Length: 139
Picture 1: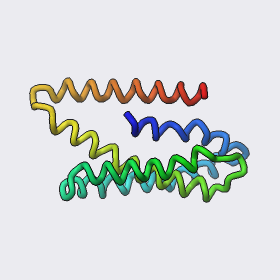
Picture 2: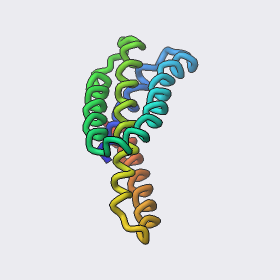
Picture 3: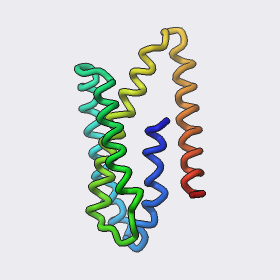
C-alpha cells in the first residue's frame, strides 16, 4: 500500500501547479511521466525473470522517495521542467514497485486461493486509493 501512498501524495498538489496553464500544457507536463512508466513496466517484466523482485522493489522505493520529496515542496512558481523531471523519476519508481510486488505476492498463494487473493488485492487497492485521495484533500 506504500506505492499508492507515493502515487497519490503529489496528485493533490499538482492541480495548484497546473493552474494558469492550458489543458494542453498540463497534458504535456503529465505525458512524459506516463510514457516513462509504461516503457519501464515492459522492461520491469523482463527484469523480474532475471533478477527477481527484491532488487527491483529496493530501487523502485528509492526512486519513489527521490521523486516524491521534491514534489512535496512544489511551489506555484516551480518550473514545468522541474515538475516533469521529478514526476518522471517517481513514475519510474512506481513501475519498478507495482508489478514485482504484485507478482511476488501472488506467487506465494496456492492455486485454489488465487481468485480470492486477487479480489482481496483489488479491494485493498481501491480502498487505499480512495483513502489516500481523501486524506490528501483534507491535508
